[in-house]
Length: 134
Image 1 (cartoon, one colour):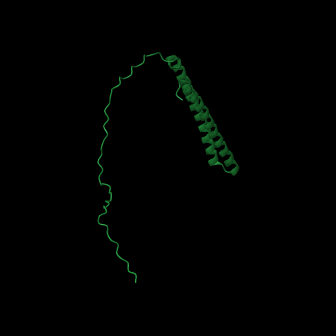
Image 2 (tube, rainbow, N blue to C red):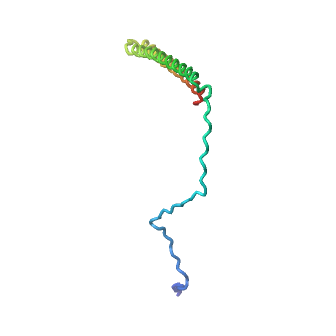
Image 3 (cartoon, rainbow, N blue to C red):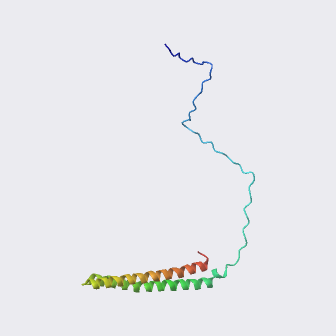
């Protein structure tokens, strides 16, 4: 009969403690003191503006921007009227052929407006690049 003997406890061995994290962690700020204070840099001298930023040049740029916006408004009114007429014709059409041709006319007017918007955007972007804004 083979009986197992209970293991003997080694009383002399050190006990290990389990490390547990604390429930509250206090904030410990790191304070840094300046070793020296630098002097603020001196301002540069005032100089005249570039030729593109002078009042005469600005006046010309404003005039060209105003004319671009005026031409855009005129084109928008004309093309919006054409598109509205085409949509009205499509609603009042009695046959499928009339409805389709009026719808195509409305799409053409809207596409023409898109072309005008794209062209105006390119010209405005060119003006902005001339001013150094892009």
